[in-house]
Length: 242
Image (cartoon, rainbow, N blue to C red):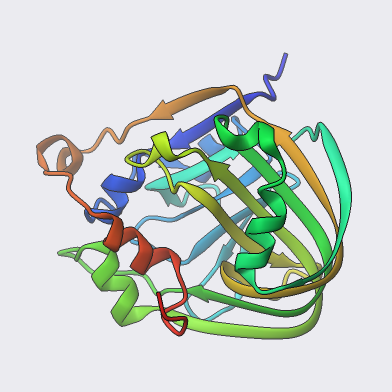
């Protein structure tokens, strides 16, 4: 029987921030643990969006494709999505206001939560990045120097994301983390900003976490070190003043 209450996570956000971009898990492994989620690929080769069991790769060029099962995964969060509640939301201007709207889900304060928001967006701003070359730099530096931005207007699509409590700070992205995939699967990436006209929000509570650490020589022998500033630089829109 599939456990829909368990989040399967590959590696930690601190390891990714520290430059550990190659994993021993593959896309085919992820599919055994979920049909909904997000992450990235070996070498930070674009952004991952998992919707309805299909793993999409948003390349650094903005092109979206179905990811090959053989692609390596250095970081991902995935589970079998089974929503416990849903409600309509509308007229959300800017990403920060969406977060405030989702904060009303009080049960998520101390538990991980998954959010799937299908809707019509007046505006979506995303980013992705090209595959890095070795030796890998720290993630904040790489994203700052190499990320590419993409914008779409009047687009139908889906936000795939998680909320993680603050005590996950060394393990995952705390607060809200969303990736986007358009209905036609031609646009997506890591969400930086948005304007939602109308949509349906589905919520799934998670009570267990299965953490798969990297089994690589680099991870075994390396040093893991990052700061909140590093994470903010990776997660937030540089065009918006902190």
